[in-house]
Length: 290
Image (cartoon, rainbow, N blue to C red):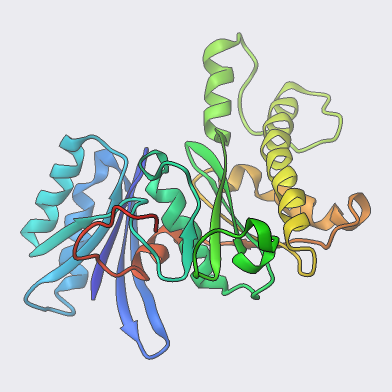
């Protein structure tokens, strides 16, 4: 059994991984803001007591301060958990990372895309987009190496390639920005409308369209690389509820607006944890391209 940790910008997420005959499986998960992180200790005590073992390995990623990370390490140490912190330099045996500077790539983007890939197991000629609506929205693409023209294929034998993607303010951050820098807009979620006639709907529709517009552009560009199969879209993140209806509308209206195949939409709350769960701890962090 392994403990998986995702220390994000606003929330701590954790999961317990069991190895089954069908492969790694998330048995239970936990999420809390950092002012509630002591709940992690109670969660660990409750679940680790049910399956006691001498030492539990923990794998994690972190974008928080050193102080916060060490506090979490202390909680885990109390439960005999030793943590290996991983980053986007961690290699994967099946996926080549084409990002130029690994140290500049967020580990949540890398492991989230890997988790989506492991969960959906795309067709060998099918592209996948992993979109996380967090504090920032990130939209990342993975395609089969065979989709590249022979003269432009990456110098790797791994069958899949992580291409990178977009970063933009997340839905909640867009709301907060309007709240802080404009006067009396009456913030709060409104109905999604094509031509809003009240301020709340104007704000909600504008933010949803900004998010979905960026995703739509990436779908179209990605579909061009792998035209034979519809693009798989995997969405996650705390901002998902703010754009879920708009995403459903995007897929529903796709055949009337575009000639490309209708994309397949999936919601996966724990893609980062699944990516971590399918990762072997390297004995030495590789300086080569993963």
